[in-house]
Amino acid sequence: MIIKPYHQLDLLRKRRTATKNTKQTYSQIKRLQRIGFSLGILISSIGLSLCAWTSFETYKRIKYKEKLVIEAKQYQLLKAKYNEIITNLKSIYKVNNQISQGVVGTKSSSAFLLELQDILPTTIQLTKIKSNDKDLTIEGRSKQPLALSSINSLELQLSSSFLIENKSVFLSKAKQSGSNQNKYLTFTLKSKYSNPKTKSLIANYQRLGSLGLLKRVNLLVEEGLIK
Image 1: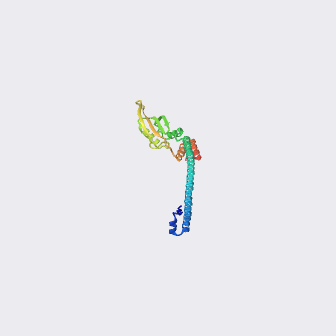
Image 2: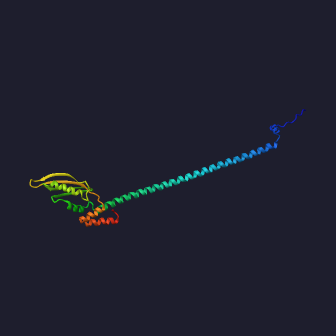
Image 3: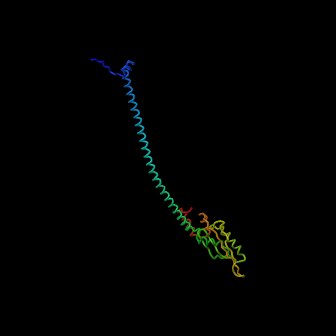
């Protein structure tokens, strides 16, 4: 019986023999393991930190977006209320202005008739006075042969009136009428009412002796409805 010698396979034998330092090779492996473990922990820590920072920033942005949505809704509500208040104020101002103009009487028949009484030539007879908002129409007749001169005089007087807008008076119609002995020139004057200042109203109402209108103007000035 032939007994063969036992051989153990050792792949690292030649390397250990070459280095002649088995303990040094083992310590290097342990050191590499420690370094790898430390690097793994470091990389994992960095990854976790980045994930935590990203999550925190995402959370901040979500909350900021929610805050912006709430503020946008509040802004829209405030804007709607503001527009509603402005609309109401404009409506109130318009009504107050209409009331004050009516009370002041810049287009009041009494004020205008008093003004006409002062400026109307004696040769003219008025037949109709019509007001439509700011438009004024006056119809009348004047006896010849000085009819045209009298009408021109009335036109100039109206143009200088504090109740009439400057350069708005014009003769729109003139027609000869009557018999040979009594000839008349019928006419139509058109103009527009003005918006005189408060001082002008007070001064002219005092001049005309219109105490009722003067009292109204002073009252509106005290209440701050006109200036």
